[in-house]
Structures are given as structure tokens and as C-alpha cells.
Amino acid sequence: MIRSLGADLVGISPELPDNTLTMAEKHAIPIDILSDATSEVLKTYRLWFTVPAEVKALYLEKFGLNLEKYNGAGRWELPVPATYVLDKSGIVRAGQADPDYTVRMEPAEVVAAIREIAGG
Amino acid sequence: MSLREQLAQFDASRNRTPEIVAILKRGTETVKASGTAGLQIGERAPDFALPNQRGETVRLSDRLSKGPVVLSFYRGVW
Image (tube, rainbow over the protein chains, first blue to last red):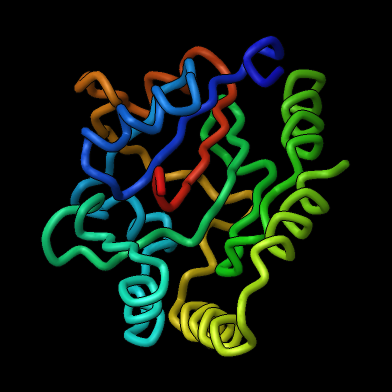
């Protein structure tokens, strides 16, 4: 839908490249999944954080989730989940970033923003 | 169903203990207080170049020269 409107969709995570390939294969995603292995871009976009100690313990002990396996040694860090719709000048025309990872931008809002860019 | 509704339904289906829910909630509050508001509407997105899943370098400015771009920052394949 996004691509048929002439826009490109790019995913970005702090995961090492092996895991971005897994992500692309797992969901058969025909888009670019980028690896920010130094978290430099996450920081520039003001989305980067270190997982709080209490949450880290929960992930390890209750969820069996070791982020170092995905992100590399010592990298208990993540982005706030975020979506940005950029016009051709790179200006953010719509977007959302919420530390509550269950809150995401509605796909319909993304499509509406692209349509508005195309029409304006 | 909207994505918001689907996520709420999925979250509820996990039947987490009140203790786990409380830890995650405190974690979210800690992250909120740490300067992670992201970009603002109207702001120019900083350029970057990062490797994709095939090891090719993708530069934001190259993609923008072809049209609008949707960036999706996600936590991981897990």
C-alpha cells in the first residue's frame, strides 16, 4: 500500500545484521531492514535508551530474552518504537514515538500522510 | 480492526501477572523521563547511512531523492 503510493518503507533496529536478515525472512518483508549496530542513528533521532535494570531482570528471568544475543555484547539498549512519514525534503510530516511499546501509529494514518504529501 | 485494537487484544491475551505489568509500566515511565521524545513534526530528519539485511548501504538522502519515505524504528525480531 505504502509503496503503491510511491513511498519507500524502511525498518531500523539496533540488531546485528544477522538478525535483520532473520526479520526480513521471518515476515517475508520485501523492504530494507537496517541495522544500527552502534545505536548512533537511534541517538540522533532521540529514540535511544538503556533498558532499565528492573526490566532487564524481567526479560532475562521471566521472558528468557537476552538482548545481547540480538544486539551484541553489552548492548541492553533499544529504540522507543517510532514511525515517521518524511516528505521528499526529509521533513517529518507525520509520526509517532511512544515509550509504551503497545502504542503504534495507525497504518491508516501513515497512508493518509503519504496521500497528503502526494497531493500537496 | 485498527492496529491499536489488535495490539490491545494481543496484550490482554498474554495474561501477565500484576507484578510483571507493574515492572513494565515503571520501565515505560523511566524511559519517558529520559529524553526519548523522538523527532517533532516539521523537523528535518537527520541523514544516515546504515547496512540493510543484505549488507548493502542504504542512505536516507538517496531514498528521499526518489520520493517520500516511511521510517519504522522497531525493537527487534524477538
